[in-house]
Picture 1 (cartoon, rainbow, N blue to C red):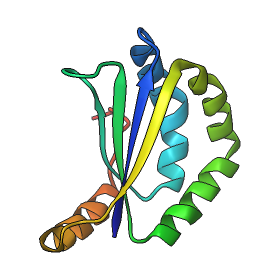
Picture 2 (picture 1 turned 120 degrees about the horizontal axis):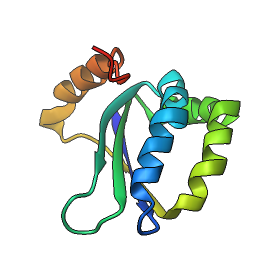
Picture 3 (picture 1 turned 180 degrees about the vertical axis):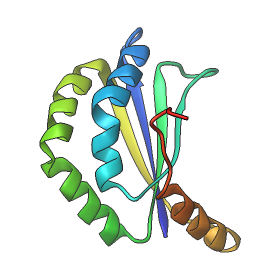
Picture 4 (picture 1 turned 90 degrees about the horizontal axis):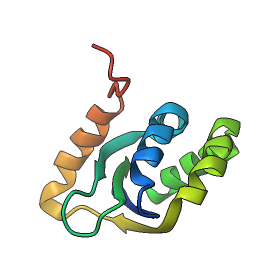
Length: 121
């Protein structure tokens, strides 16, 4: 199991625009193709104008397969065309769990698959 941590930095003043755009146009495509959203955060203290996301995968191969499908999705391509101009930088890390955290991560990945992020009660 692995966690992909992605850090995006936006031009000052563009974070709120990105978050709104992502919720409206990007999230559904990612949720269709990526197996387990473990976290989606915005910076509050320290470096500002950033989002940090964490996605769980069973393997690097699963990550490659899922991302290939995502980047073939016309909805995702359309979202990226609007989102990229808002961005200043991006980073990606692949993290593997410490031995004592593997079982917990497996449960988090399983639980995240059914996550409803629509905001509807």
